[in-house]
Amino acid sequence: MNTNSEHGGRLKVLVVDDEPTILFTLKRILEHAGYEVHTAQSGREGWQTFQQGQWDLVTLDRSMPEMNGEEVAAEIRRVAPKTPIVLITGFTGAVVRTWLFDAILGKPFRPAELLDHLRLVLAKYAQPTQRQVA
Image (tube, rainbow, N blue to C red; front, side):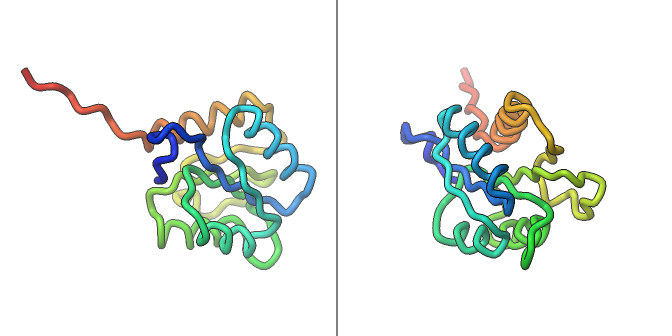
């Protein structure tokens, strides 16, 4: 996982969805919540964008042409297994490889629900504090 937050920067999120309205909505919600957001409009573009940066979190749609969300997640897990990944999909029952994702959020969703999912996933990856031994 990237360490932008450890250096005072905003958490860097890659949002991948082929629906422009969803992409715009996710970007607005996350930017309003203080995240630095980058977007991609297809699975292939998302995978290429992922390879060009360091990300604190990735959100993926499942159903996209060329490369679906599960395929992108599998590639991310192969090269960066500690990157948190959240699947946001209207077809939660169609997800076959659920283990690729840290959370699955169904569409439609409320902004607070999205932000809660992201906070829980990011907390899971946060470094535990070292206990002082007396």
